[in-house]
Length: 442
Ligand SMILES: CC(C)(COP(=O)(O)OP(=O)(O)OC[C@H]1O[C@@H](n2cnc3c(N)ncnc32)[C@H](O)[C@@H]1OP(=O)(O)O)[C@@H](O)C(=O)NCCC(=O)NCCS
Image (cartoon, rainbow, N blue to C red; front, top):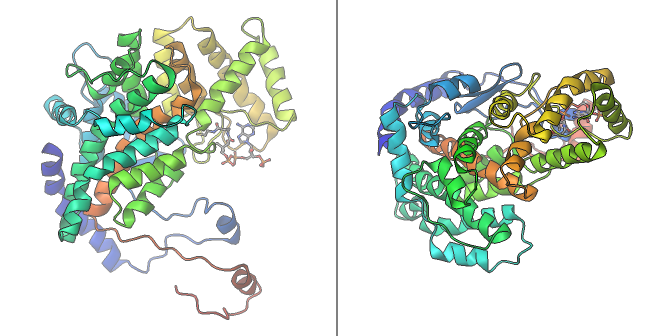
C-alpha cells in the first residue's frame, strides 16, 4: 500500500538521523528537572521526540511542519468540497510529505475496504447499559476491534524487530478506517433509534460520519466534519492521550490497546472532556441575557465569574500564547456558514471582551481562546447537541495522530518507556545536599 511504500523509502534516512543523535550525542543534556516539575505534572520536561506535530507558543500547531492555514490550503480536496480529505492528512502525518490528489484518494480507498464495524462489536455496544458514557463505549469498541490485530499475531510468530512498524501500520489503517462508523454506531444507539447505517462508498472518511448519523444538514455538516477531524488530529507527543498511547505501545501492546488507553485519558475533564464544559458555560452566558450582551455587560459577567473563583472555559492554554489557530479556522467557518447563529455571535462578543479581562488578572499566561471556545457551538448549530458525545468526535480525529506516532515509534525502534520514581526521603536528602542513602539507577 502507498503508505507502506513511502515510509519504507524514507525510513533509512530517519534511522540514520536518530542513530547519529543517540550514538554521537548520547550524553548531551537536553534539560534539567526541578522539584516543582516533579510535583507539578512533569510540566515542561522535554521527554519525548516526535516529528508528527509541534505546538509553537506563538504560531500554534504545526502538522509535519505545516501551520493550520497551510495544511488547509495545501491538502487535496474532493471536487465541490471546501475542506481537505482526511486521507490526505493521514498521508501527510504518516509520510512527512504532502500527497497528490491521487495519493490522498488512495488512502481514502484503502480505508473504505475496512470501514464496516463487525457485528460482534455492535452487539457488545448494544448490550451495555444505556447510561454508559459514549467515551467508555468508544474505548471498549476500539479494544474489541483489536481481536484482529495483525501486529499481535505476527509478533507471536517471531516478527523481526526492524519490521514491527509494518503490521503496526496495517493495524492503524484498519482501526482508523472504522472510527467514523464506530462513532456513528455509538451515536445512533445512545441518542437515536439505534440504526446501524453502512458507510456510503461515494463519500470520504470524514463526510461519512455525517452520513451515518443522518445529519439533516448533510452537506454543510460533512464540511464541518472534514474541518473538525483535521484540526483535532494531533497536538504533539506529550499531552495525556498521546503520551498514554506512546507508553502503552512501548510495551508492544498493539495500536488497538494503545488507542483505547489514550481514549481513556482523553475522557478526563482536564483533557478532552473540557470541550463539553465550554459549551455548557456558553449556554449559561446565553441564558443569562435576554439578547446579545453588550461589551460592558459581557465584561461585568466575566469579572463576576472570575471573582467567584471560576475559570472561564475555552480560554488559556498550557503551551499556546496566542489565539489557537484551530479556533480561528472554526471561527472563519462559522462566519461563512452560520453568521446569524446567536451562540456564534456570543462567541464573537466574548472574544472581543475576554482577553482584556483575563489580562487584568495579571496571572493568566494566555488570555486568548483555545479550540474548545468554539467547537461545541458548531456541533450544536448542526443539531449534534449531546455534549457528552463531543469527546468521541475529538477521539475519532486524534487517533489519526496517535497511530502515526505509533508507526514511527516502532519504525525508529523506540524501546519500552521506563522512567524512574524516587521516594520523598530521597528527595529530602538530595535538597539537603546529602548523598543518596539508597542506590538510585541513573
Ligand atoms: C488550559 C489551562 C488548564 C492551562 O492551565 P495553566 O497552564 O496552569 O494556565 P496558566 O499558567 O495561565 O495559569 C495561571 C493562573 O491563571 C488561571 N487561569 C488560566 N486560564 C484561566 C481561565 N480561562 N479562566 C480563569 N483563570 C484562568 C489559572 O487557574 C492559574 O490560576 P492560579 O495561579 O490561581 O492557580 C487553563 O488556562 C484553564 O483552566 N482554562 C480553562 C479550561 C479550558 O479551556 N480547557 C481546555 C484547554 S485546551
